[in-house]
Length: 258
Image (tube, rainbow, N blue to C red):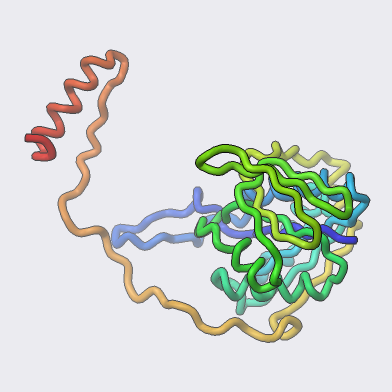
């Protein structure tokens, strides 16, 4: 029995720069695994250990996802093995192509009980991958999961909804999107890093998973928003009453209040 964690190795948006035209430049942003994915692996490790299952990491991307620094970073967090789909065709692939490839890999692994992912991604934050992946697999999807237990047959998940906490039990395979606060990832130690170098890594190309993705939307141009620029006024909140008065004065001066 296997439990799969879908993770991402992508440029960190915190290191991106924005040009005068509004274009976002990722050329100097180093690729990394986000905290969302590290959390998913932490949850997956606990669940797999409790159920006696193997924990398999799966990722899709360009050439960088297959580099040793990337695979070791994932394996050192507790994965038993990784399957990497690395091809220039997937360098900037969107949600649907990535989910399609992930679904093919999951189906090829066989005996997968659960697929676990973070509730959002490091690059676009669309929160679409788990639902799309579940639809392609034909499996139920649970999002915003805070706690997850699995005994090898049935899973019990508690998820946060606007009206409260909902607890569900389900049997059969499912896609689980865990919330950012579902676990606190532990930083890998030297022993973990050394052990990662001995774990299995399977690298596939686009040809191995049905070919390159179909072309998606293309960015034609990027421009700054029209209209007046923000003034960026800072208000000292040490004295709440004075801060409120200063805010009202600034809003009136800007014409936002009469």
